[in-house]
Image (cartoon, rainbow, N blue to C red; front, side, top):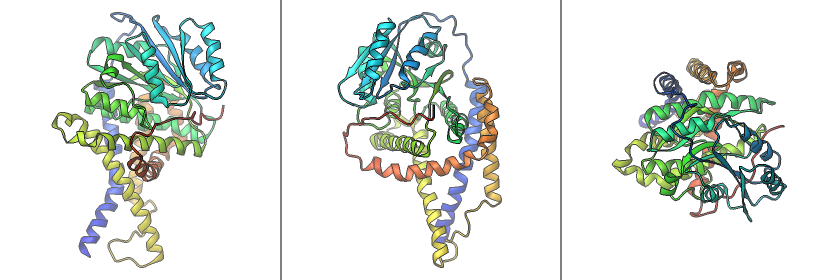
Length: 414
């Protein structure tokens, strides 16, 4: 019984201390990146200005694709083309694209007759592109006028750079769900990328805004068509082939995010399932010493999955304690925040403040969001645990080779 009590005690401590450790790690990583690794350079005078191909995969994007393409006219980089890939849309997307092609000499269109998935659409766009460098954005994304220049600086100064992830910024904030995601992208997503960049490898580029060297993509056979999250998969494929992936916080992209709980749930479930699919696909390669630099992100994700199920166990044991008398040492008397919960909450608030402060240099008014988001870092862990519990089995038991088709996501209230 003592052994069982010790095991359960260790599990309960892990449920508390892991988010605390990660919050402290992300704060330290974000601050170190800001002062020691954040790029500082003049992108107005690049060594050359090669052709860049902007790829926009589309599936039922009639509400936003025209705005996205017209916003690209603000780019201060002169030498780029736009390729819109229609992936079997059933709305007016095709008609809108055809009209835009007549107006915009930079724009070309690739059309797929049926929905083949975002990975396939991007691959077809890359094959049709003329540029050596590709910038990939979603059909609802507004690319910052200087983003291409910031991406190119990395490619032109380092031949080992295979991909660069940009800095997505949430632009729809008409609901609480929209507002909290502003803080999430600063206090969690942005800080994760900063910290991982300090360690040397990134878990993933942002699917909504990323740039690639075409030669690097060719070396890994472009994007996969059977992965729910093609962005995570291509990030791992490139790094397993020893290409470098970087984070460029100045390459901004304004995006639309879900503003309903249903839309948010579906999005996070897909993200979590995609991460688990990648671990399932590449876990055997993690036993190779050559891939040791991938170990930190592999271990961190595996630990986060274990934490999610330990969190579930804690909730189950708490409910059981209310129904039956459990042996001493394994019961959970309360899940309400005690003094340990207060410590965790204070650290999460500090994490939120640091994240918003780091991103305030790129977006005015970010710090004002703090009062909407004071509780979110703690809630994030509950959301993360819940989607992981459901998504991990879906990834593990997904039949191999199943085509990953897509549908246009919830893009909020407009």
